[in-house]
Length: 321
Ligand code: ADP
Ligand code: TRP
Image 1 (spheres, rainbow, N blue to C red):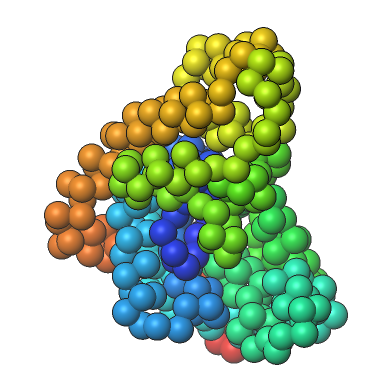
Image 2 (cartoon, rainbow, N blue to C red; image 1 turned 45 degrees about the vertical axis):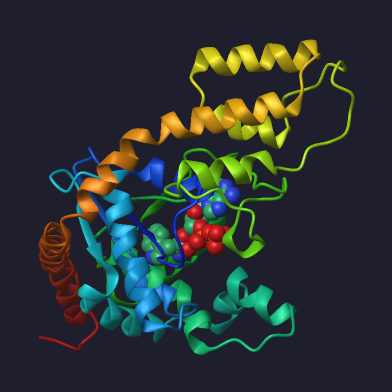
């Protein structure tokens, strides 16, 4: 299977990004072909400071490699290094119904909040469709929030094929764990917009402080508690071993424990869970030329495939002979 996924460099990665998306697509890198990219053109719709955008892009590459993305197995590249995708976006846009894009949540939610949206946000799903179609992708591993965009991509591809013949490969979303909604330190969904994140690579000291401040209920210690649905337990389950998780579940059900102990156990488990990636990250960050080389190799492998698909599309619609 040909697998592809992308992630926007709009901030440092948090546990939601890792457990909800990144981990799942790194697991698929052993497939026949795997393309993973850093969606800096998408991020430009929100990050408007050039230094910051560039910094997040490089950090995203280092983070992905530290988290296990292996450039010998998968192609890692930066979205804007493949200009064919931007051209394919235009070709798809010529047949994209306004109504379909008006229903897409990023644009619709902004409008509903009375904010003015720009054309970049409106056309965001078309660029995403081009990202996917440019590599003849078959499987797109994504978090549950991206399913709508994959549906739009499929609609655009089918309608293009209807007009011009069987040119585009119709992809499928792979939502590996639809229930993976990682809670933040306030119990709501973890998101950088809510300022409730635990970052994957923040210092263990900073992270421990954040964990100790996680909001909990005020039930008495001795009361038995249901671990399911408890944000602290959910976070702990992500980073604890199976054995420790089962033990914690028992502790919850029996009662007689304090949330302070759970927080301490969570901070310890998180520190050891991310210890290896953290060490790998430090080693990689010390070799910026190696990162540049990996991204340049990725860009040329990705461009080769995207140019081939673009030519097929251009021929089909009468732009090229
Ligand atoms: P944020 O909400 O912090 O801006 P993004 O929208 O950039 O995060 O997230 C990128 C991807 O990470 C999303 O498409 C989604 O699949 C995944 N993701 C983000 N937050 C969570 C979460 N709390 N739980 C599960 N997955 C998440
Ligand atoms: N829109 C995705 C997100 O915010 C990122 C993305 C851009 C993407 N292009 C893609 C994901 C193509 C999968 C395939 O998470």
